Length: 119
Image (cartoon, rainbow, N blue to C red; front, side, top):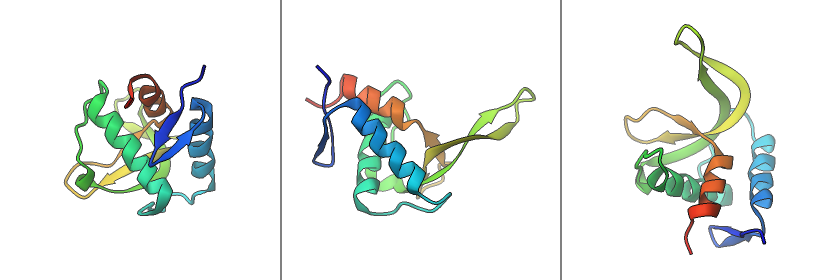
């Protein structure tokens, strides 16, 4: 039986439904436009904080550090150890501190939440 995923008091019936929601939102958003409020912002923040503070990536972040999210191309290293932008769009988080912006995989975060999330 699929595990439901709850974010900001809304329960997605399945992991696929949650992934579809975030994918559809990502496709509807303008490139690099800040997501600063609303349901999507709150769900992204809850998901990012849970993933970053509980998974093996260990980014340790507080709620007050998250300023906004946006959509941009992922950045990957090339063979010369430089970074290049890939064509894949991802959610990015912008901090109100000196931390650099970082992209994060909503799909990986959702899988982590489904497997190790709150009871």
